[in-house]
Image (cartoon, rainbow, N blue to C red):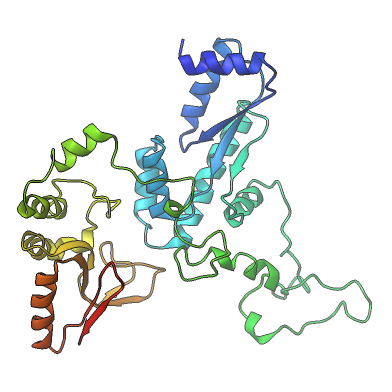
Length: 343
């Protein structure tokens, strides 16, 4: 018998009333777990933990960090819309609804627990789609008119109101419903720092990026560097896909950077240790599988840039080169906060 189940059984026998599982994205994993628990005499309610998908990068990091099994069909569905946050959320809602409905319908649980991470909008959408709550935006002024952005008054003198604020002309949901979740967008560091959406999940206590144990790090990065070329080689190997992660890079090189892969590798071998970069893009459709991001129907423009570690000598060379090129801008800062700019 699995030792974890033995310990769990001891906790139940000591007085625990129910079990809440870690989040998962494969209902069969939960079903198998429940079956194993019942086989060792655990009869208390087992509540599935459901975590709504807020963004593709956070989903990948969290599932990788927690070693959560994800079906290939789910990965494929999310991969196809990974640069459109709203589409990812919608896919995530559908995935969660399917799992919840199956587990409840087949009798494997009497309820579910949602890990909201203080972002309740997707959870509310899941509940609404499961018909467990009513919608506050179902008010109509008549059968032939569009929805009003408020609940019509029952007062005789006001029940026929048909005037809406101009900014709501094409937005049939109420102002409160539309704006109460604004802190969920964007999922980066551009909003209110008090918001639970400020920063990525990797900035929270719930997640810590790691390269594994000491043996894992040695196997990936080498026993220990004995020269600068050894260090340059590690960064270059990451760019070429020979090393999957670096302490400053939590994911493998993104597809858009494949177009400048050889140039990046050459830079790293010369001591310009890159940790972030992007190629120039001029008017690519937002739905493009490599360079696109955001909703459909838009166009993407971006400047080429590279962020890197450099030695004082390489910085001097870089500044000299930028001085001869009007199209090149350089901004540098050292550990003492001293800045250097050119262009």
